[in-house]
Length: 222
Image (cartoon, rainbow, N blue to C red; front, top):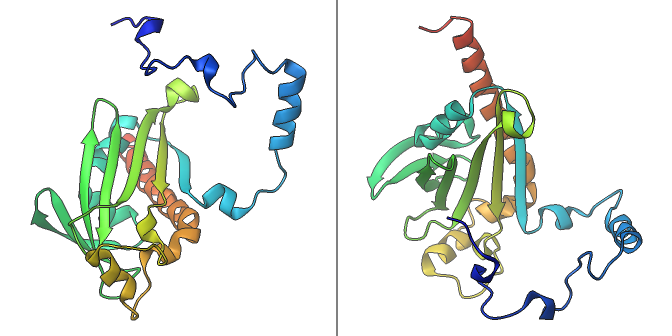
Protein backbone atom coordinates (compact mmCIF):
# COMPACT_ATOMS: atom_id res chain seq x y z
CA UNK A 1 0.00 0.00 0.00
CA UNK A 2 1.34 3.41 -0.97
CA UNK A 3 1.94 5.85 1.86
CA UNK A 4 1.40 9.58 1.71
CA UNK A 5 3.63 12.12 3.48
CA UNK A 6 0.84 13.02 5.88
CA UNK A 7 0.71 9.36 7.00
CA UNK A 8 4.14 9.57 8.64
CA UNK A 9 3.63 8.91 12.40
CA UNK A 10 4.81 12.39 13.43
CA UNK A 11 2.68 12.81 16.57
CA UNK A 12 1.81 16.20 15.13
CA UNK A 13 5.39 17.52 15.38
CA UNK A 14 6.83 19.07 12.24
CA UNK A 15 10.37 17.83 11.60
CA UNK A 16 11.47 21.40 10.95
CA UNK A 17 10.83 22.24 14.62
CA UNK A 18 13.21 19.55 15.94
CA UNK A 19 16.59 21.03 16.97
CA UNK A 20 19.98 19.54 16.18
CA UNK A 21 19.24 17.85 12.86
CA UNK A 22 22.02 18.02 10.29
CA UNK A 23 20.69 18.11 6.75
CA UNK A 24 21.43 19.79 3.43
CA UNK A 25 18.89 22.46 4.38
CA UNK A 26 21.14 23.78 7.19
CA UNK A 27 24.62 22.55 6.11
CA UNK A 28 26.12 23.18 2.71
CA UNK A 29 28.56 20.75 1.06
CA UNK A 30 31.63 22.47 2.48
CA UNK A 31 30.26 22.42 6.01
CA UNK A 32 29.24 18.75 5.91
CA UNK A 33 32.61 17.80 4.41
CA UNK A 34 34.41 19.46 7.35
CA UNK A 35 32.09 17.79 9.82
CA UNK A 36 32.63 14.33 8.32
CA UNK A 37 36.39 14.88 8.40
CA UNK A 38 36.22 15.83 12.10
CA UNK A 39 34.16 12.71 12.85
CA UNK A 40 36.49 10.33 11.00
CA UNK A 41 39.37 9.26 13.25
CA UNK A 42 42.44 7.15 12.56
CA UNK A 43 42.03 5.39 15.92
CA UNK A 44 38.88 4.84 17.96
CA UNK A 45 38.64 4.09 21.69
CA UNK A 46 37.46 0.55 22.40
CA UNK A 47 34.50 1.87 24.40
CA UNK A 48 33.32 3.99 21.46
CA UNK A 49 33.09 0.95 19.19
CA UNK A 50 32.14 -1.86 21.57
CA UNK A 51 30.77 -0.14 24.67
CA UNK A 52 27.03 -0.36 23.98
CA UNK A 53 26.72 -2.60 20.93
CA UNK A 54 28.66 -5.50 19.46
CA UNK A 55 28.04 -5.74 15.72
CA UNK A 56 29.59 -8.17 13.25
CA UNK A 57 29.20 -8.95 9.58
CA UNK A 58 30.56 -11.74 7.40
CA UNK A 59 30.33 -13.07 3.87
CA UNK A 60 29.66 -16.81 3.63
CA UNK A 61 29.89 -18.76 0.39
CA UNK A 62 26.63 -20.64 0.66
CA UNK A 63 23.02 -19.83 -0.28
CA UNK A 64 21.19 -17.56 2.19
CA UNK A 65 18.43 -20.16 2.54
CA UNK A 66 21.00 -22.68 3.75
CA UNK A 67 22.52 -20.27 6.26
CA UNK A 68 19.11 -19.26 7.59
CA UNK A 69 17.79 -22.82 7.92
CA UNK A 70 20.94 -23.91 9.71
CA UNK A 71 20.92 -21.11 12.26
CA UNK A 72 17.16 -21.33 12.80
CA UNK A 73 17.75 -24.78 14.30
CA UNK A 74 18.78 -24.42 17.94
CA UNK A 75 21.06 -27.46 17.67
CA UNK A 76 23.34 -25.56 15.28
CA UNK A 77 24.56 -23.68 18.36
CA UNK A 78 26.02 -26.97 19.56
CA UNK A 79 28.32 -26.89 16.53
CA UNK A 80 29.38 -23.32 15.79
CA UNK A 81 29.40 -21.61 19.19
CA UNK A 82 32.49 -21.89 21.33
CA UNK A 83 30.86 -23.06 24.52
CA UNK A 84 27.14 -23.99 24.32
CA UNK A 85 26.77 -27.78 24.45
CA UNK A 86 24.31 -30.62 25.17
CA UNK A 87 20.94 -29.03 24.49
CA UNK A 88 17.94 -30.33 26.41
CA UNK A 89 14.35 -29.22 25.87
CA UNK A 90 12.74 -27.83 29.03
CA UNK A 91 9.38 -26.62 27.63
CA UNK A 92 7.86 -23.42 26.37
CA UNK A 93 10.12 -23.45 23.28
CA UNK A 94 13.11 -23.08 25.62
CA UNK A 95 16.24 -25.23 25.56
CA UNK A 96 18.84 -25.60 28.30
CA UNK A 97 22.49 -26.21 27.47
CA UNK A 98 25.81 -26.25 29.23
CA UNK A 99 27.68 -22.94 29.09
CA UNK A 100 31.32 -23.88 29.31
CA UNK A 101 32.52 -20.30 29.70
CA UNK A 102 31.28 -20.60 33.27
CA UNK A 103 31.79 -23.41 35.75
CA UNK A 104 28.63 -25.43 36.33
CA UNK A 105 26.63 -22.90 34.33
CA UNK A 106 23.57 -23.46 32.16
CA UNK A 107 22.24 -21.14 29.47
CA UNK A 108 18.58 -21.10 28.47
CA UNK A 109 17.75 -20.37 24.84
CA UNK A 110 14.67 -19.73 22.74
CA UNK A 111 14.90 -19.27 18.97
CA UNK A 112 12.59 -16.82 17.22
CA UNK A 113 12.91 -17.29 13.47
CA UNK A 114 11.13 -15.46 10.65
CA UNK A 115 11.71 -17.04 7.23
CA UNK A 116 10.05 -14.21 5.30
CA UNK A 117 12.58 -11.71 6.65
CA UNK A 118 15.45 -14.24 7.00
CA UNK A 119 15.85 -13.19 10.63
CA UNK A 120 16.91 -15.42 13.54
CA UNK A 121 16.87 -14.09 17.10
CA UNK A 122 18.43 -16.10 19.91
CA UNK A 123 16.84 -15.17 23.24
CA UNK A 124 19.11 -16.40 26.03
CA UNK A 125 19.95 -16.08 29.71
CA UNK A 126 22.38 -17.60 32.13
CA UNK A 127 20.99 -19.62 35.04
CA UNK A 128 17.25 -19.07 34.49
CA UNK A 129 14.48 -18.91 31.90
CA UNK A 130 12.28 -16.33 33.62
CA UNK A 131 13.73 -13.47 31.58
CA UNK A 132 15.67 -14.19 28.40
CA UNK A 133 17.51 -10.89 28.37
CA UNK A 134 20.65 -11.84 26.40
CA UNK A 135 19.66 -11.17 22.79
CA UNK A 136 21.57 -12.25 19.70
CA UNK A 137 20.05 -10.79 16.54
CA UNK A 138 20.92 -12.29 13.15
CA UNK A 139 19.91 -11.37 9.62
CA UNK A 140 20.76 -13.33 6.49
CA UNK A 141 21.00 -11.38 3.23
CA UNK A 142 21.39 -12.60 -0.33
CA UNK A 143 24.89 -11.40 -1.22
CA UNK A 144 23.89 -11.09 -4.86
CA UNK A 145 21.75 -8.11 -3.90
CA UNK A 146 24.41 -6.22 -1.96
CA UNK A 147 27.81 -7.54 -3.09
CA UNK A 148 26.87 -8.77 -6.58
CA UNK A 149 28.18 -12.26 -5.92
CA UNK A 150 26.65 -15.55 -4.86
CA UNK A 151 26.52 -16.22 -1.15
CA UNK A 152 25.21 -14.85 2.13
CA UNK A 153 25.92 -11.74 4.16
CA UNK A 154 25.33 -12.40 7.85
CA UNK A 155 24.70 -9.48 10.22
CA UNK A 156 24.93 -10.14 13.97
CA UNK A 157 24.13 -7.61 16.70
CA UNK A 158 24.25 -7.71 20.50
CA UNK A 159 23.17 -4.96 22.86
CA UNK A 160 24.66 -4.32 26.28
CA UNK A 161 21.75 -4.99 28.60
CA UNK A 162 22.19 -3.53 32.13
CA UNK A 163 22.21 -7.05 33.59
CA UNK A 164 25.63 -7.63 32.03
CA UNK A 165 27.16 -5.16 34.51
CA UNK A 166 27.82 -6.26 38.08
CA UNK A 167 27.28 -2.74 39.45
CA UNK A 168 23.74 -2.35 38.08
CA UNK A 169 21.43 -1.59 41.04
CA UNK A 170 18.07 -3.15 41.91
CA UNK A 171 18.59 -6.41 40.05
CA UNK A 172 15.96 -9.15 40.15
CA UNK A 173 16.88 -11.97 42.50
CA UNK A 174 17.39 -14.42 39.66
CA UNK A 175 20.05 -12.11 38.19
CA UNK A 176 21.61 -11.07 41.50
CA UNK A 177 22.23 -14.73 42.35
CA UNK A 178 24.32 -15.05 39.21
CA UNK A 179 26.26 -11.91 40.04
CA UNK A 180 26.94 -13.12 43.56
CA UNK A 181 28.49 -16.44 42.57
CA UNK A 182 32.19 -16.22 43.33
CA UNK A 183 33.23 -19.59 41.92
CA UNK A 184 32.82 -18.52 38.31
CA UNK A 185 32.87 -15.57 35.96
CA UNK A 186 29.67 -13.71 35.07
CA UNK A 187 28.73 -13.35 31.41
CA UNK A 188 29.08 -9.57 31.62
CA UNK A 189 32.72 -9.95 32.65
CA UNK A 190 33.39 -10.91 29.04
CA UNK A 191 31.57 -7.96 27.43
CA UNK A 192 34.78 -6.15 26.48
CA UNK A 193 35.79 -9.33 24.63
CA UNK A 194 32.43 -10.04 22.99
CA UNK A 195 33.72 -8.81 19.64
CA UNK A 196 36.65 -11.22 19.80
CA UNK A 197 34.73 -14.31 20.91
CA UNK A 198 31.94 -13.61 18.42
CA UNK A 199 34.44 -13.21 15.60
CA UNK A 200 35.77 -16.66 16.52
CA UNK A 201 32.24 -18.04 16.46
CA UNK A 202 31.32 -16.25 13.23
CA UNK A 203 34.38 -17.80 11.63
CA UNK A 204 33.23 -21.21 12.91
CA UNK A 205 29.82 -20.61 11.33
CA UNK A 206 31.43 -19.57 8.06
CA UNK A 207 33.73 -22.61 7.96
CA UNK A 208 30.94 -25.08 8.71
CA UNK A 209 28.53 -23.72 6.12
CA UNK A 210 31.14 -23.27 3.41
CA UNK A 211 32.70 -26.71 3.94
CA UNK A 212 29.34 -28.48 3.79
CA UNK A 213 28.09 -26.48 0.81
CA UNK A 214 31.25 -27.05 -1.19
CA UNK A 215 31.28 -30.73 -0.29
CA UNK A 216 27.69 -31.07 -1.43
CA UNK A 217 28.48 -29.21 -4.64
CA UNK A 218 31.34 -31.58 -5.36
CA UNK A 219 29.14 -34.62 -4.80
CA UNK A 220 30.83 -35.82 -1.62
CA UNK A 221 27.50 -35.96 0.17
CA UNK A 222 24.54 -38.05 -0.88
